[in-house]
Length: 313
Image 1 (cartoon, rainbow, N blue to C red):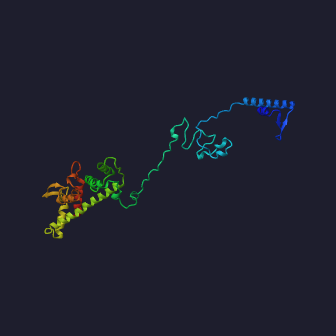
Image 2 (image 1 turned 60 degrees about the vertical axis):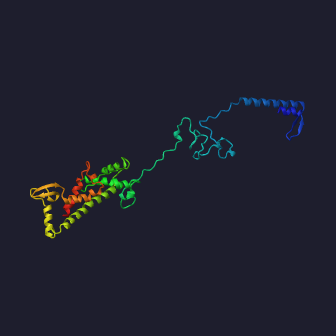
Image 3 (image 1 turned 180 degrees about the vertical axis):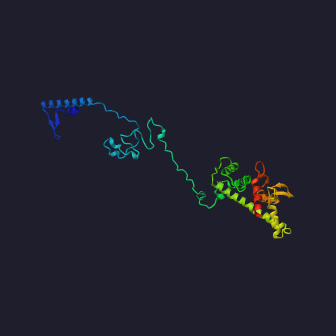
């Protein structure tokens, strides 16, 4: 350099590093060479175009890239996108939970909605009961057992008593009763579910009680009148009289409260029928008038009582 030339005076350093004296001609040649070389460097530097700034559409990645200490070029950011780091040619948006571009909505960062598989519907009654052979009270929804026994079952008997003999309740009938006890839409009733299953058991017991009490009533009739019906022929004559429809009549005497010389009163009020009706139906309620109040006329239960009396005669 010129500074070095000025500091060394008329000496220069040869290829082996030894200082050498310069004569005037050599000194002028060296000085001219150094001057021309500086001019060439300055001219070349100022003629170079200004470096272009790199455009980017996303914030600079934070942190250090893997193996940064061994990097020798900008190609260091070439880690696979599957690892969560973008390559230099694909850095328009930080992925996997990072920032989004200005034009994107926040929906990009939200997790996708979790789709649950639909609950499998049991294909058999046994499967619906969890493998049990029959429905039990434990299958009912939590907290419903007491009201089922104290309210649902009595309402079921009242409703059944208004239907034709041996008819069951529909799913709509059961749903209406459950809504009345627990509140509308509180529990959904479906065919063959625990509600209909348990209620069908209770109705079977209810129907059976008519037969059981009908048999007891007829047996008690003959026990109370053993002196009058002490023979087989006497019993046969009584049965034929009660069940045979007289000529010109449409009904048999056994269904009437009174039948004297063709004059009759009180249809379906015969003592035997009312006795079965009371034992099999009325006595099941704390207040027997509950099952005859309003529109709940127990005509079906009364007809059941008549049928069992006739069958046991």
